[in-house]
Amino acid sequence: MDQTTSYPVMLYIYDLSRGMARQLSPVMLGKQLDGIWHTAIVVHGKEFFFGAAGINSCPPSGTPLGDPDSMVDLGSTEVSEELFMEYLTALAESTYSGDKYNLFEHNCNTFSSEVALFLTGKKIPSYITDLPAEVLSTPFGEALRPLLDSVAINPGGNNITGHP
Image (cartoon, rainbow, N blue to C red):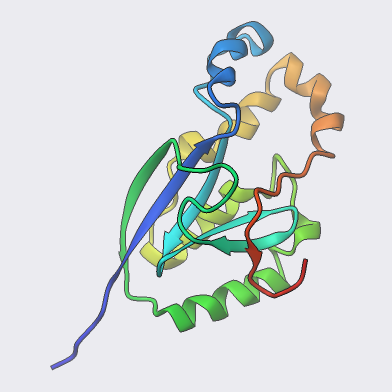
């Protein structure tokens, strides 16, 4: 009989604004934002995320961000740790190297969604991936775009390719 092992997949969600987005967004943007989201995928006992230093990993809740604000169970995967690491290495060498990070268009959330799709066949919630377009659609977001495009976020961890 065929024995398949499945591994739980979690989405860790952090509010980088620590609650300030909820308070200030109505005044600054003219619309309510619940947070400024950073996400990571937790599978095979590690937290994986993308930032200015590329794809990184750490123990769950091991970044300077601490414990996530919320965790979403994305289901499970039958992808082994070995195959997953090969997949991440290929991503790190192509579409998710640190120099390809862009705060609005190619960030931790696009990474989490792509990895979730690979592992479980499901993307992460759209309220997270739609946030950059929502912010940029406001007059304030349009005015700030040149400044915000130069911002890179790197929450720490170990680069999976061994390169800084």
